Image (tube, rainbow, N blue to C red):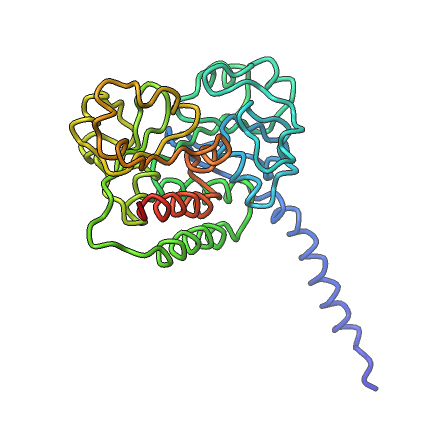
Length: 296
């Protein structure tokens, strides 16, 4: 048996000492993230107390395996079920500033259009604002949150979502004449344009959107426009479907005559209108609608 010499032991000891000295520096590497405003915030370590005031951001944090860092959410965040037990801090339009501050968050995640960002920052809180209108933007948001949370496999998580959508699209039979469709996203006549994540999904599943790309991702549509467009298929959430047949001129549309109307439940609508982890599930929901109505 060869015994280590004094010089060898001394060399090993010095190597260990150097490693131990370097370890705090490695652990203290700052976390820097830039939001949709172009503002960069920095943390000495990944934030451990997070408030999310947008359901899609809540779901993305949880999809990255970091639900346990959430200490508060908006009133509409309801997935996964565990977040329903967290303190609620209002919504994007009416965030409860005092409630958010009381939770002592390391960071607040909000929509770019949310109110209260300036007030929260004036109170010393770090706020990151994100809002995805299409799939590439949703991917970017997930990767940014991966940076924030120091989750290295965020690209793999996103690729799994994309693969899920592709699988649904490939399984859906295509017809010689695609259905011309109108998707009403919310009350007030806001529709999904082709450049929105919902419009992109419609295209991937073989639908032809009656809303033009020049109208933007989520334009407010005049009801007369829909009558003139005369879609083959109408997609709408149950919250907006009340009195659909009483809208002026709508009874004359081919979709209404053929009863080609997909009315999504509240839970289904939540999945469909949130860009993020459940986009493959959204594809399955929409595909079921297309198969059922396309057979008419």
